[in-house]
Image 1: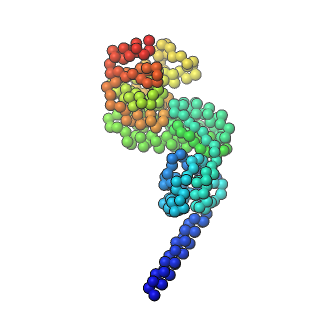
Image 2: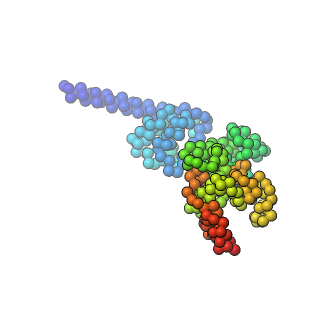
Image 3: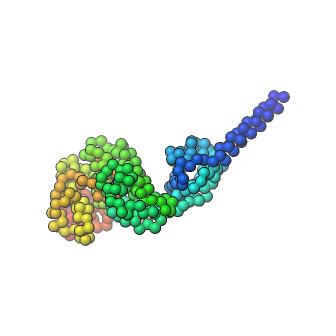
Length: 327
């Protein structure tokens, strides 16, 4: 008698769970916007993806969706790419979409070290993008995306961006800007103590200089260490990429001695401290180097000719290295 009751309760429990699962899996989701776009990056975990969709307003809760995917054995089958939902779908259909890879494959790569001018040119020539900014000034673009800065250089994060064909370039600018703000703030909060930097924007400036000076990734932290030491001592940074940036379209590919003596706001051979703005788009590695520079006594470096640099802690040693590698 007791066993029969337990069996009936068990059947009832299974029916309730099945009904609840069916309702959860087959009830349509409300789209926050139409169309709703989201990107699933290579290597993204199911948890992180579900959390991002919850933040975007597509999922009310992330964990039930994760449990459903695991129950159905789909958690390891996610396909990277850009997805677009034109109409409401069920949670089960959403899971099928991202495991089958039903993506909208328009994308664009923004490269570390690009200038804002290069970024605009790349967007303007991309045929998958709606060009809403062609007639806008740099300042107007910043206003349209809600940026508080007045100069665009360095504010956009280098990455590969997936988007629905026909998306506005303003949307890509905004995503890239917000991504850079996120990385910059996270890096700033975790920075080393006693750096000669007062604001996250100064860190962005230094990171952009490190980005342009780094030929070999293994030298990045040391290059940041040299510039940090120079800032602490009040020495001129004396870095060629800033001079080139200040020359703008006048730079013809050759940096001459007279260029180093021409006074511009970006000539770090003439003016002390950091440049007024970044000079390029720095990636995560350069942000990390600027805020976690190598602990070194080096004050100079010179290119060896193979992409790497020779570092020196005195002018005598530096001159010797210049004679060895440059003359």
